[in-house]
Length: 242
Image (cartoon, rainbow, N blue to C red; front, side, top):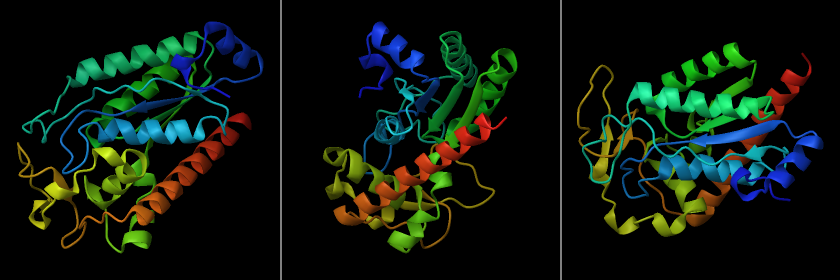
């Protein structure tokens, strides 16, 4: 059954609503440099998660918001950004419009750390103004414990976790031949740099080396999708009990 919002006719959308579908998944990312994987990594991963689990939880899968807030990686070729105010206002408008069309529960699957505050603020504003129940999920944080169990190292930006996810869901965009171990950069606590020296950022010393094993990547991303699905189902259940 089709649940992708933009692939449904208005008649099909209305039919699903009459059958009780009142939840939507909204993937959000940004366009920025990601080491040896796609510029759209932060969009591809949440969109793929939504497409994998949307039908199982009977939720509309909204079109991805691809343009977000890029800061330290803006200096790299192909990276794009929008303003904080513009991003927040746009996301608010999208969520408010969804509420006006009968969506009662909204799950935002965010793929980018640089816009977490804006999403939190926008979600609260829309909840307060419309009553729309909203959960904002930062997938890499919710799934960070999966990484060392499979890879025996910690993740990071464009590090082993995001690279594994892209190997699993967009393998043609992975350019292993570009990778060099010296591309990993340890971000020291208390230090902010514009631009970042490289697009592969780790937050614990001596961690994060990339691993291009296809089997591990598929196992990792399968666990990520299962984790996200379970958290969403728990969230929806808790809302339904109130």
